[in-house]
Length: 455
Image (cartoon, rainbow, N blue to C red):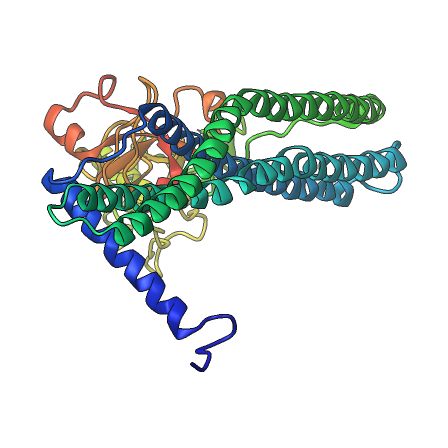
């Protein structure tokens, strides 16, 4: 018969199929209880230990590979960190060559540590697990030979107990039984010697593997500690040389806080015409000088200039009514510019025009002084501007505000400007202020970059 393939003939294929069929029939009979099965509890225990040992070794190999991958990742991270130090370390600084040497030794130390882990741990682990596949296949083959032995034994026993005995068949069955028993016992004996030995070898392997890893780590960290100490010495030297040039970083004033303006001078309260007003630079108040010639009074408002005529002028030079001074002060505080009063063509040439003093609203801590009380009556004292929270902010201290996105905060100045940190504002939530009108219990600080100015 022609060969079906290299080393495989049709007869061999048929023989293998017949063996598989016989084994399947024998297993069915054993499960049905119609045929007894050869049991070896000691060997079964060895097989259980083998499977457990294989599972543990496979897990250890996987975890060891993960550990090596982590070492390699840590090497790359350490390398980038040292490269960053080399980039920022300026050439004229002392110890630059030392830092370069330390970085080079650091890289070599990581490479050596990783390579030794591969050689002394991973490769040893691979060799240890390499013997399991062969033993596992031999255990499976031993199981098949045991079924063949049981099948041959049952066939021989059935021929012996038959009513009509055929000596030729009995002799052939006995020959097959002896052959199957010999093959099974040889394999069984080898495995019974190897499996306990393999099971006991796990202790020494685990000890050697973890001792190698521990020793390599100890040496690595010892050498790395020396490099770190050298780097610390170099940086200490650099710090001593440049410590005198250190300068503190002060917080910059917030751009949103309006600049503080000087108070503008206000007109005299009696409304008396003045010829040469003098301004006190300290108290920002007008100092009226003595007048020799009576003149026209200060106009009541910019839109209604005062009219002066010989008939209406006070010949005795009495003072102007207080109402005109109050009106003038109110209009001046609002920042309006009062026009010069008109005079009749028949007025005396010696009459002096009234001096109109322009005033501008002064601000203290961002609030205007002299503004109408009704403008910000609903705002807290010292109100600066409004901001709206763009993100949630969880307060981390008792003096901080808890913010939710969309909250409107009324910003107020700090009681002590020196206590204000850069990027932080003082304020009270608009809802709390409108509800309680209590500033001390509701105000707090919050980060400026969490908010957006709306007013």
